[in-house]
Image 1 (cartoon, rainbow, N blue to C red):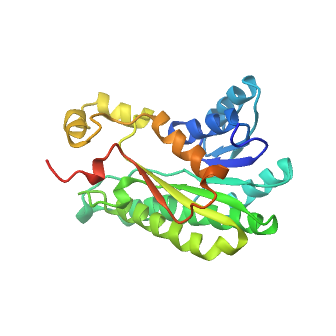
Image 2 (spheres, rainbow, N blue to C red; image 1 turned 90 degrees about the vertical axis):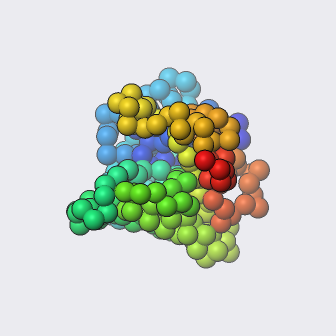
Length: 253
């Protein structure tokens, strides 16, 4: 029960890593608010948490809208009285040859994967400053550290989110607000598994390139998410914790 009685808001929580974090946080004793654009899927996550004896609410949010994020933060505070943990997980993938990448697709990726993270951080921090402390965790990507062809919008957005994490950690430390990021590698979410099933992701090559020799599972990210949100990470801020099985550290083909 490392997060007992704390209030956590997780965006992009209808599936994948966001859903996993929400369920794990509830098991660790947190009151959980799950948010995304898919209210039906969110309600199923909240119901699962409540069936297991936890406390959860579900709200619809569009992270590209500052007003939408501010609204869900306000709803969280109205329901539970405070906000202790903000997890900015919502994001989209974008793979397209850069020479043909449309302004609309570029804007959609950057607005979701970078602007949305900033809006979530900003709205959460305003509340955390009032209560003299809190924890913000941004879910970025190892692609924010390495260059990958046909991922211009995605890599740039994730790299920006990593730097944003460090800037805000430095700026908000005097309010006892810790800001960190988790940068996952290849994680077997439903989306990734679907790409694998279609033969569009070279699993064998990825596993060979990864020192630990496998694709990551959602469970592999959850321990890091609990740690950064807990008192065990009380002196950790401005860090980007890479959870990739060693992929970005390995320099041999």
